[in-house]
Picture (tube, rainbow, N blue to C red):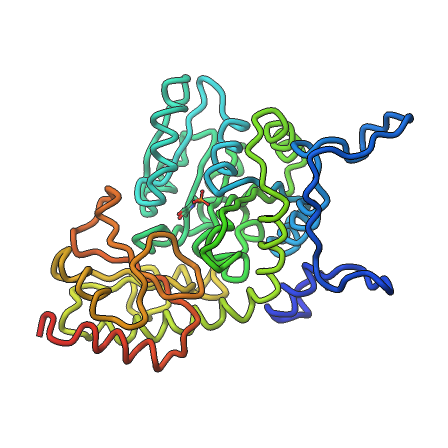
Amino acid sequence: MTYGETYGDSTRSLKAIAAEHVPGDPVGPVPVPAAAYHLGADEDDALDSYGRRHNPTWRQLESALATLEGAAAAVAFGSGMAAITSVLRAVTEPGSTLVVPADGYYQVRAYATEYLAPRGVTVVQATCAQMCEAARDADVVLAETPSNPGLDVVDLHRLAMQCRPRGALLLVDNTTATPLGQQPLALGADLVVASATKALSGHHDLLAGYVAGNRADVIERLQRERLLAGPILGAFEAWLVLRGLGTLGLRFERQCQNAAAVAMMLRSHPAVTAVRYPGLPDDPSHAIATRQMRRFGGIVSVELADADAVHDLVRRSALLVGATSFGGVHTSVDRRARWGDPVSPGFARISCGIEDTDDLLADIDSALAGAGR
Ligand SMILES: Cc1ncc(COP(=O)(O)O)c(C=O)c1O
């Protein structure tokens, strides 16, 4: 039996950050904020030497992330974008064909078209529904599932079956699902990329990202990329992510519970014209999501009448926070058209926090009262 099959999610998260039981040592993780380390006369390259190359707090975080993702190794970065752009630079070259999500996080496709395409990479944009077809001619495929913000789902097993025989590399952005909601490597992905800024750290107070996987060659290239390009994670942020992992199981359980309840309530609300949540039985992605996800996540997407309706929802609420980003302990609402996402003006992404479910339902219902009735 492999690690994780015997434990529940909270236990898995806690075990992932557990230090060895050494009498006199702190029980929790300890940050090591060092730029320079004492050098010995033996000039051993494996020893910690400089803060852009090594950090003991990164190592502890990377080991925890690798454990949670079911990976041999992970490499931590200073943000999700630092992780994603580093891996895309490491695995593409002039002449490569790269597929990126057309309906996923918008700055990823901006990077691919503004930075990689002018350097000779053919960039193909595909929606979740088009991914498998687009992967036929690709060297590298980056899928994001559930997609941000539309919450569409890519069939990862089918996509992996498309990529693997041709030797195409499959990267999966696991930010919205988290490793407690979905295990892309077990479904056939080569690498997981993710922002740890969101539910993983969970408090809206830091940026972090990582790449995890079993491809030792790519992991080594990424460590080199991080050393040379320098998109490192601060030791203090690495420590905060580790600290946050201790409560990930509890937080994510409540966020998923709140999201399911909010989605159920909103789907029959007169002020709401559409709801997407992969956990809703009649959601177009529900069948695939049920096959590949362990939990359906903490985000719900809704369409209200117009931009004002979204602003009114936040203004009238006592609990909702108007903010971009997602996965934090507070429920937050983001009108995505303001960032240029291809959605209607009244489209809002609701990221459920850890408030008591009944309080959240009552608050949203009262904030929507009058609208659309
Ligand atoms: C799905 C997804 N991937 C990657 C990122 C980038 O992460 P970061 O903001 O930590 O750079 C985001 C940010 O919102 C995201 O939503």
